[in-house]
Image 1 (cartoon, each protein chain N blue to C red):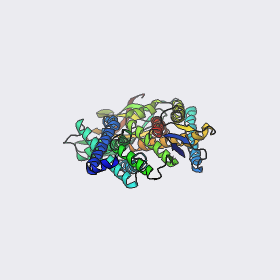
Image 2 (image 1 turned 135 degrees about the vertical axis):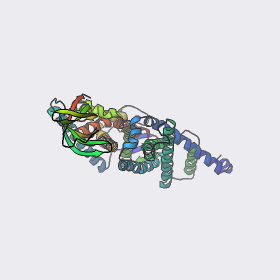
Image 3 (image 1 turned 180 degrees about the vertical axis):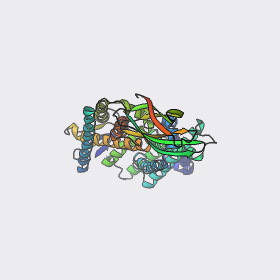
Image 4 (image 1 turned 90 degrees about the vertical axis):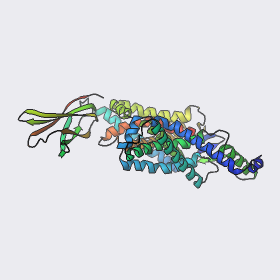
Length: 298
Length: 136
C-alpha cells in the first residue's frame, strides 16, 4: 500500500497534505483566536500598548511556538528543524488570520495609521498562532499528515527501529505545558476590564477562597476527575507527592504567567503591590484551569 | 517525571530532586501569598477612598493650556469614575473650569491625567480637586 502511494507521486500527495495542514492551522487560529479578535480591549491595546512590551511578547512567542511544535507536533518524528518550520507557519497563519478577521470586522480601515494597524494585528497574532499550532495537532484526524506519520511509524516498527511505546515527559516540559495553558486562557481574559474590576470588588477574604479553589481545581482536574488523559498516581504514592511536585508548581507558574500578562497589558502600572497580587490571583483562577487542562489535552 | 504509556500518564515513584525542590519553592511562594493576603484581610480597616492631587506640569499647548497632575488614593478602597475638576480662580471667582473622569483610581495607587483650559491662567490660582467617585 505504501509503495502504491509512493508511486502515485509524492509531490501531489505532499502538497495536498500540506494544504490540509494549513487548513487545520487556519481553523485552529479561528477557533482559538475568535474570542480575542472580537474583544474591544484588545483592539484598543493594539494602539496604546507600549511598543517594547509588545515587542517582548512577540519575541517570547517564538520559542514558545517552537517548543510547543516540538512537543505536540508529531512527537515521535519531529526534529528541531521541523519544529521551527511548524512554528513559523503557525505564526504566519496567525498573523494572516488576525489581519483578515480584523479587516472583515471593520476594525482595520485604510485611513488608520500604519502603527495602529500593525499593533492590532501583532497583538492578535500571538493567541491566533498558538491556536494555529493547536489546531494542526488537536484537530488532526485520521487522514492527511497523520496517516502519513502512522505509516512511517509502522515502517520503522517493522524495520526494527526503536519507536518507544513509553515516552518520558520531562518535568520541565510538564511545567512548560502548564505555562502554555495558563497563558492561553490568560490572554483570553486578561485584557478585559472585568479582571481589574473583579480585583477591586474582591476583599482579601474572597482572594483567599479563590487561591484555595484554584489549587483544588487544578489538582482535581488532573488527578481526581477521570478525564480522558488523566494522570494516575500509583497506589503506593501518597496523594500529596503529586500535589507538591505538580500542582503547587503549576499554580506558581500560573501566577507568574498572570503577572507577566498583566504587566504586558499595562495593568500593573503605578499599582500598589497588594492590588497587583489581587489582580494576579483573579487571573490565576482561569490560568490554573488552563494549566490543568493543558496537561490533559496536550 | 511523568511516564506516558499507552496514552495513560502515571507519575513515577522516584522523582528527581529538582521536582521536590521546585515543589518546595512553589509551596513557599503559595504560602507567602496566602499569608500576605490573610494579613491584609485581618488588618485592613474599612476605609473610604482618599485622594491627594499633585500638579506635575503646567504648559501652554496649541489653542489652550494644559495642567497635568497625579492623583493618589491612599486608602485601601478603590474608587471608580473619579471626577477631577480643574478651576482657574481670580480672587475667589471661578473664571474657567474643566473636568476629567478617571475610570479607576486603585487603592494605594496613583493615576495621572491632565485638565485642559482654553486660556493661560498666568498668575491666577489654579485649583485641581476630586469632586466625586463611585464604588466599583
